[in-house]
Amino acid sequence: MRKKIVAGNWKMNKNFTEGLALFSEVMHMANDELHNNQQVIVCSPYLHLHSLVQLSKGNVKVAVGAQNCYQAESGAFTGEISADMLASAGVQYVIIGHSERRQYFGETNATCAEKINIALKHNLKPIYCIGETLQQRESATHFDIIKSQIAEATYHLSEQEFAKIIIAYEPVWAIGTGVTASSAQAQEIHAFIRKEIAWQYNVAMADEISILYGGSCNPKNADELFAQADIDGGLIGGASLKSRDFIDIAKAFN
Image (cartoon, rainbow, N blue to C red; front, side, top):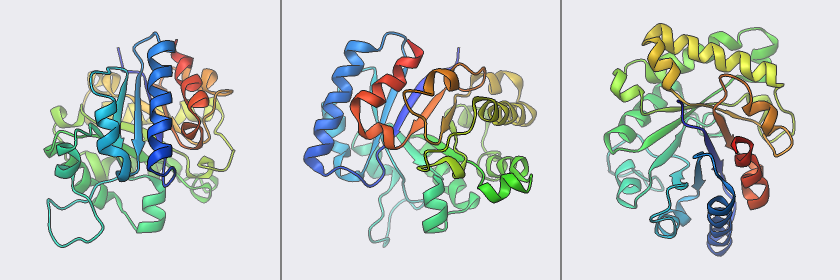
């Protein structure tokens, strides 16, 4: 059975004190209220990571992830952070290819492929983000865009490597806008992604991979979204900054 996952992406929010307080709330709520083995992942700014790992030691319900890593092993890359650094701090997951990284920092599918490689080398589990813009959807090229995002960043991987990846489908037009893809729209894309993976690898692999939905997911729509056959959870932005909302989303799997 595929792992049910709710991952929070804090983006560039919460100072050090606020971040520790929020994470503590999330962890205690998860321990008290989540009963279906769903995995909660908190992807915080780098500032918080080591402390969150320390707070979460021994906790099987809540894990810690980073929001990005650099594609090189080390070197003169001022302001960047390596996969090795993240792993040495006890981080388990890393978001790669978020639409904001693509839009504001020029990341490409090729860049994402390099980052996935380095993350896997250091035993980090990539949460690889894909998704189309509104223009791409309206021009009916969204299936081609998503297919190329998967193929160009991951199809060089062996089956064993690919099995370690989580895919997050985030329609760019629904991120931070309050607009959510309908459950039918989200399911259509998730089923398409799974079909593509089955074609490239095999049906067993496609059935094993967790595919998350991101894009204005909230406690009110989580039940309907997560009830879809191919949606295995969510990559949550704004709602992950409120412990009650975040845990209520995760409780959709209770």
